[in-house]
Length: 238
Ligand code: URA
Image 1 (tube, rainbow, N blue to C red):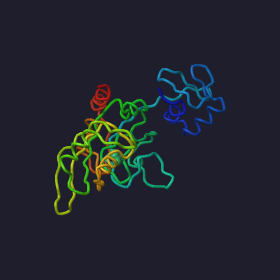
Image 2: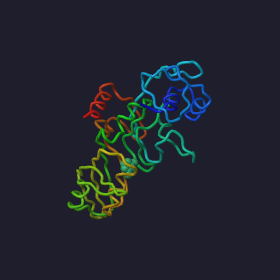
Image 3: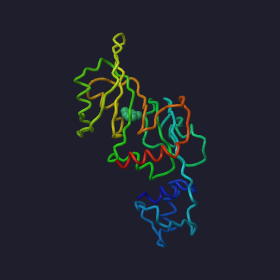
Image 4: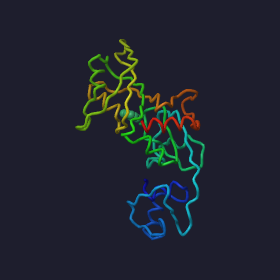
């Protein structure tokens, strides 16, 4: 189920704001009934008419981008910063699946398929995200264990995590490691390391489910292959 105004906007006929306006003006019908309530959710099977015309069939597109630092994970930015969508050569109204911080790099999926987006980001689906992180200080084993068991962010404990590939730089007094998590809370990785007093210096997502950065250079994008899409859906249903 998705919000009606989003489904209309995703079809490409107008922006979400314009879709809301059309709804309020009584120009949108679902299964023959005018729907004005902006919170209304619709299913794929619902028949939607805008100005008495059905929505065009949307061709869904799915991409993986090696996001560079310095791009914001939204479709447009009020401050005029470059967005991840600028890096994808398409006319479709795609958007990022979850987000990666402005100063972070790595695997970012993009799509115009709302159901796919939901399946990928819903916390109950527990898709693994793997981050290569450089942090200040030398990470002790006990601290890794603490992170793995979960730490409290805003009073709520994070789920189980894995810490792997720990490497120390004793000259710079930094640690590089991989953190694998299944949630996607706001600034989750940075905040987890903050809780244990190891500020994150560098953050790169190296894997989303089974999608890695293989064959991509920073800033490059490619379409997901049908078998990759299938595998991601399988993971989301586990
Ligand atoms: N965790 C963060 O702190 N930042 C990201 O971009 C992703 C996960």
